[in-house]
Length: 357
Image (cartoon, rainbow, N blue to C red):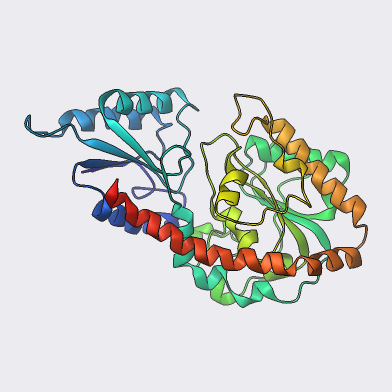
């Protein structure tokens, strides 16, 4: 049995919807017979929680059968059991009535990544050789943004305030009144035709720009001309969530700073990636704030990321210095790229292991 109001029913991307249906089909094949698979995507919508309760009330369970267990699956989207009243209600309902095993994006259950499986499906575009050409570094960083989430607004505004906005390649596709700079910022891109051909029409801003590129590393000219990738993940308050955004610099031979949930760097280290703590020590800092996983509040993490970038710009004051630094990191960058392929295989094994839960 399976309940969902998730991405396999509808999502913001045809690529995601198509793959989620394939992915869930595999999960249903692997799940133990006594388990009900529940897709937690969009528990934040009250009407979905009401549907969940009604569905569980309608299923037929023989009195002689044991109470089924619930595999609570978090896949393409982030999961946080306490972020909205309806999410809290859904988790309470399930945990009060069933034995719940969290799978997917979870810090307390059986972790695996939907996005690593998605990248595996699109290896040809993610690992395209156009992204590993000899770099011509002109910018200290690149930071691409679609939806104007609060942490992205705060981060970009702070970059502008401290005077390093122009040292990076930045996009802010969806305009917002709280941005303190001229917006939207839509880059003029020149993507390879074989990558553009695999995009869906509705995902395009124009013939050359994708509003939400989830199948490649983007325009190779921009990719090969920046030193550090700054990833503004979808959220900063989830349980644990690494989307395709996080894996792009690992694939594309770039040092990185990631603004994500407090457990993100711990998960990357657990997966044995090099997180470049020596270059960007402030973003790695831990704290004592119990509200935020990792103990560091959102605004403090944003300040730490900006300070790491500012220190980079001050220490390596010209393009030649950046290129020298980049060349010194070659072995570490190649290690991360190869490690992604290894982790993809390990991730597949974790998915297969749900049959043993």
